[in-house]
Structure formats: C-alpha cells, structure tokens
Length: 66
Image (cartoon, rainbow, N blue to C red):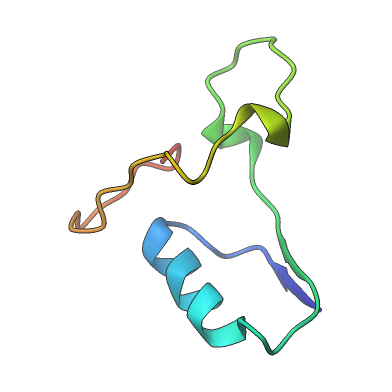
C-alpha cells in the first residue's frame, strides 16, 4: 500500500501512476482543504469526472487547486 501525502501536481501524479501501476494493491492520495474554493457544497468523488478534466502538462508551475 502507498500512502501519498506529497503529490503536488499532475506531473507528480503521473510519475506515481507509472511507477506503481501493477505493483501495489492500493494507492491512497491525501489532499488538503487548501485546494477547495471554500464553498459549503458537499463534494463527492461522483461529482468529478477525471476522464474529461483537462490538465495542461506543459506548464512549469501549477496552482495548488489544479
């Protein structure tokens, strides 16, 4: 099991996926409240579609909320 608390951007996430894919049974990523906009809406994983969320990997810097 991998418990990741230091994935700061999409490039870090891609590296972790490439490294651990097929090698671990469980990968747990912990986020921070700092990435959310402060709304009181209850957020669930079902409300996010990672397959259609565009991330520009050519950037040198990523805002914490990206």
